[in-house]
Image (cartoon, rainbow, N blue to C red; front, side, top):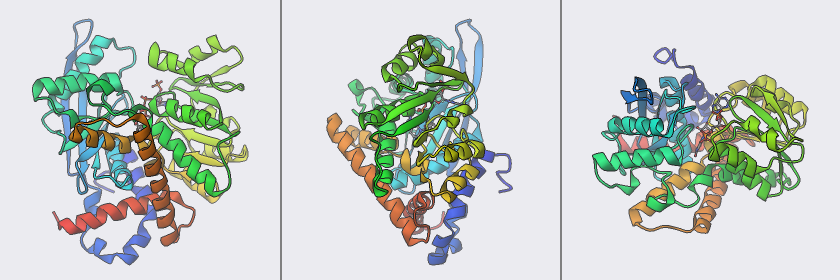
Length: 433
Ligand code: NDP
């Protein structure tokens, strides 16, 4: 705690895990004796480096880049790269820490890591983005590799940025298909990776609802964000018969009582890289509101925070509950504050924690690694069917562990315990180091 006092997001992520895994230590006192918790909360290493690049006005710019290699007990470090001005060591450590357990939950052999830079891609030209990606990869390339550490995308890093980074890695080292995931399908990427996190969230929600005799068909859904995760969560929810009435970006949110038209959102966000408020120019029935948190005041059956950490606080959770929300699933990492999560659980709202609900993205990234190793490509249907099985399996693991350790119905505890047990058992097998 003291050592990380200046890292609030990291402490929040550790606290959430710590609060739920106490019963594990009763059954496994050897984990205390061998310092598993102390070791698992300290990253294997943190790499921090200068990223210098030249902007369109020929000015030299300097950003700070990171890669946290947190834990490789069950496989190579795996986790995305985030480019956002709020990136700092605390953010990267919380993301890397959560990634350890999420990756373990997928049942695939991948360890936990995360990276990024305090670079703001907003308003940058394509040339500036390319130069930044190349500068970031020039240093990062010294620490990664298909069997060592395999980064992917996250906020501000999509197919374009992965492409530039892959090109730079290839130029510096050699062609290594498996060094990054989230690649374009034409050069080693997996079909279904773009959709995987969002689709996975909905497959997970489906499992939660099914158990209570509910379904997505006819339900009203609110999704925050309008990036990769939000877009494909909306798409799958719509395919399964739900009506999505709101989504957002970091400036504000749109409410469309007729149901969001996804083509318009994609055109704005993926096509012209514009702002979500442009939606109302095309759909005058829709309304735009400045600010992000107001989105949770819209009545809905299912709420999917898919933007960023701590975007849904206890006031927003109270509103959602008052308005009759039935299920909440975290598409983003740690979007709900600890107090908000507690409130949902106390009120019997179905709650899918990010570690479980958004694990579909990294799972398909691991499938991309498998395809790269085998030098073959699976069809979209093959990948999607594996993703569905993985999400069902994660749900089953989380519910089974929740039941076994006295947390029936609490998927936060179930997911934490299941992920922790997998990694802790392997750490014990490897001895203390
Ligand atoms: P994108 O960059 O594609 O989209 C992020 C979205 O969130 C944008 O709409 C963005 O708006 C909005 N946003 C970003 N920062 C803020 C903020 N401070 N306040 C409000 N809105 C904000 O990222 P992804 O969709 O990839 O990632 C979203 C979340 O999902 C993150 O928490 C990420 O860690 C998590 N995640 C992503 C996975 C993936 O496969 N991509 C896998 C698992 C989890 P704007 O355009 O205005 O910035």
